[in-house]
Amino acid sequence: MKILLVNGSPRKKNTFNILKTIQEDFNLKQYETEIITLSDYVIKSCVGCYKCVLDGKEKCPLKDDVDNIWRKFLEADGIVLSAPVYALGVPGTFKNFIDRVAYNAHRPLMYNKPTIIVSTTAGMGTEKVIEQLKWFEISGLKIIGAKGFMIYPIGEATPKIADSNAKSLKMLIKKLEHEMAKEKEKKPTLLQIIQFYGLKLNCNFGKDVYKADYEYFQHKQYHKEIKINPVKELFGKILYKIGTAALRSSVNLEKRT
Ligand SMILES: Cc1cc2nc3c(=O)[nH]c(=O)nc-3n(C[C@H](O)[C@H](O)[C@H](O)COP(=O)(O)O)c2cc1C
Image 1 (cartoon, rainbow, N blue to C red):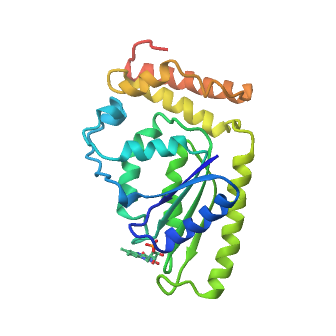
Image 2 (image 1 turned 90 degrees about the vertical axis):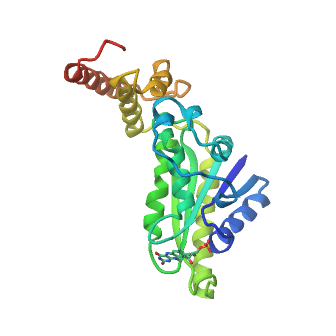
């Protein structure tokens, strides 16, 4: 099993050291691991052209490493996301990366991939970083644990903090290990089903506008390979039908479903 550890700091210090600790633990248990530092890659800023959302990611005018990094996400069995607090948010490189893969919120290719988040700070703000990184849930990651670590003075953990950090980290590692060991396909929650049908509904605004979404959803049932609770699915489908009817009457859509 493969774990991808993503360092969102432009340097290899506090946050990276935590990733190294996690990596060593998993390496001892014979997992395959890889740490990537986002700032080692070329990640251009989104230009807001909407091509990826509307026409498909291959229409993005920016040529850089984003697709290669995203492939690593797709191939991993478990993920560790990390970032230090920069002005009460994630560092710019990480935000650029999120903006560039944001189209995955419309057409998620992953499903419940076990993920943990770690963040470091000199004082405050890890909850804001964690909140931002939870965006990845909509792209199919399952965030099963998150922890902020205060590392003070900057770059140097005091023995007391280091001790409690080590305990928290062990618990987080256990959680990830436990989740990855579970049978692969976990049933979707009602919220996930509603989200799916909500996205499917969105592309009915017009296949000429949301071309890529329309293409993706026309032949797609909710993660077809996974057995889901029929009551939940019925609920999702009813919402979808009601929503489609409401849309048709409000914007006079052609019948497309
Ligand atoms: C540009 C910048 C902005 C920062 N902003 C904050 C902040 O808002 N709050 C805070 O407590 N620490 C802040 N810090 C401190 C870092 O979050 C902290 O030192 C972190 O552990 C650095 O992680 P790294 O060694 O992985 O880069 C900032 C550091 C930098 C370089």
